[in-house]
Length: 99
Image (tube, rainbow, N blue to C red; front, side, top):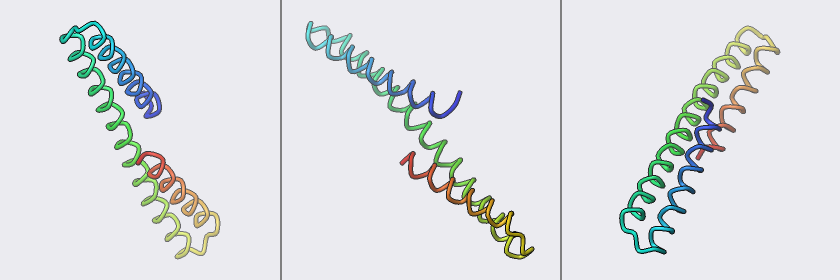
């Protein structure tokens, strides 16, 4: 399962939990309210886990890109240097999108 689908699943679970909690409050059903809150928190945890995983993946991409760029500089290889710069930017972007 991709990070995007895990984030979406977490967001849907949060929404379902909020809805269940609101229905529980509306009808005075404490158990339903509590179950809704638990579902909401579970969704938030899934979302946070997916975001953390994507940030870690972005960090790896950024580091690999730096190594590639450095190797390109040492070997005077413009293609390797460009691939490295691209991977660094891609990794930073992935990290920024998942803050």
